[in-house]
Amino acid sequence: MKILDDLISQLNPEAPVRDIRQGVFHTGVLTRNCGLAATLPRDALRQEP
Image (tube, rainbow, N blue to C red):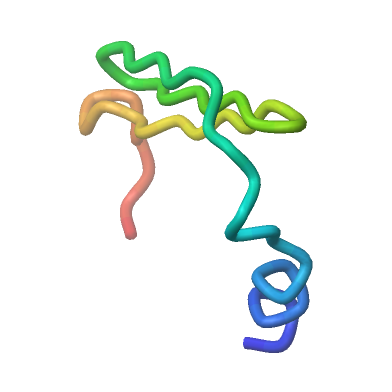
């Protein structure tokens, strides 16, 4: 997918990871900026795939 390739090409693999926080459904990573990802629990998805 072109959009993923474009995003990955902008990453700096040399950037130090300053902090990682994990919750039950969230992960946050702090480098030069902050990134947040969420994994929804199965019950939160009320629609059919």
